Length: 119
Image 1 (cartoon, rainbow, N blue to C red):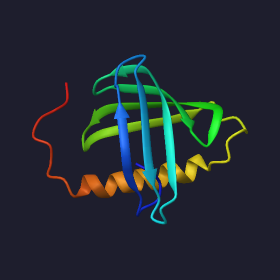
Image 2: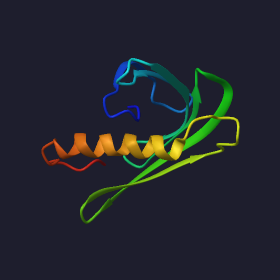
Image 3: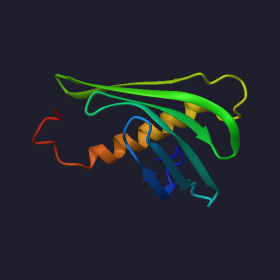
């Protein structure tokens, strides 16, 4: 989690169900801490996850994230959408999410191939 390649998660509380809340605190490589939180709106295991997104540093600036997963010939395809961004946030979400996905790609590349499919 987090867009800094040298960042680390400090704490995470996840209640993954519709109406459940999450809160994740992570630190950049320079030690600067960030906390994001939200509410799960839709949970379809292995298919879709939708939730609100807010930063502790930007109270009352709420956006929405949706992630869809689908099998394809090479594995799993992810479609990601971060919407309702408005102009109130000072975050560069496009760059931040790209760096986060780059980290995810590196982590997944170090994992052995899955032996079973997600239902």
